[in-house]
Length: 279
Ligand code: C2E
Ligand code: CA
Ligand code: CA
Ligand code: CA
Image (cartoon, rainbow, N blue to C red; front, side, top):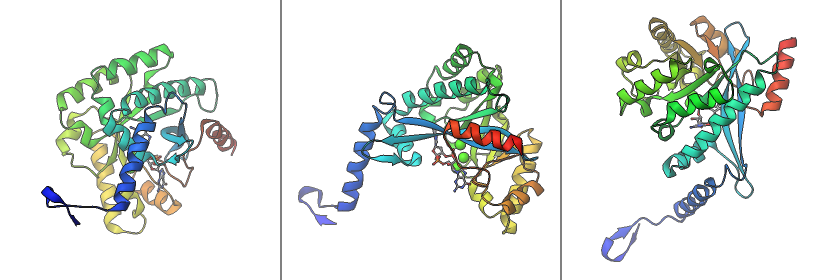
């Protein structure tokens, strides 16, 4: 802290200054990321309890010529703050449709579901549902192949609008997953009100599920809660076969994590799925 004129003092931390400037540069660069084709969707396999490939989550990657590969948690937060997440999110949805189209030409991938993360700013756009439906129609896709992943915090401030948007899409077959379940503040009544089909069990619960009795009990309670609401569960961040076995014992439906594969480019995903199908 340094004394400074009328404001009495201000915090001056050169490290923080450098970070702020870096974030400002990234925020500016994000505006051109779509146009300059710096974005890519990677795919991470999702397995069922029998170990079969049933879908994938699309995870966004940004490689900038100067800044290099930027961590998604960082650039998505910056894009959300600046509003550029809306055009970026639209690009993600369009790419997801192209991906589903490509899959329908591959026998090994034809039936897979594709999960797409949706940000708060994007979901709050008045034309969000219409846009998704238009995209699916334009690409000749069955809407039930698409799963939209939403987080708890983004759903609560206008619950009527949220429910209306979800219903409009679900009528056509689009499915909804509640991401990072257990980390937010959602009430049980919210879970009942929303037309959800899937709960994604957050990695923080999965991490200790094999070793810690408390985590295992919590996971069992989440799976039971989901079951009583007619929802499926997908565990995220499954890294070990001990975790997989513990989750299986609790009745979890879906599995995603480094144990199976890291997120990878589409072509590698196709090769991975083919190898897996031959085993
Ligand atoms: P998320 O939706 O919770 O995605 C799961 C994150 O966990 C991904 O990080 C994934 O790479 C990572 N992960 C998967 N399996 C494992 C595992 O076994 N162990 C560990 N330690 N990590 C695992 P990623 O790709 O860095 O993405 C971070 C976050 O960025 C995502 O968290 C999501 O909130 C956001 N995100 C990614 N793509 C998009 C997008 O297209 N749109 C929006 N709005 N957000 C996105
Ligand atoms: Ca997700
Ligand atoms: Ca998640
Ligand atoms: Ca997470």
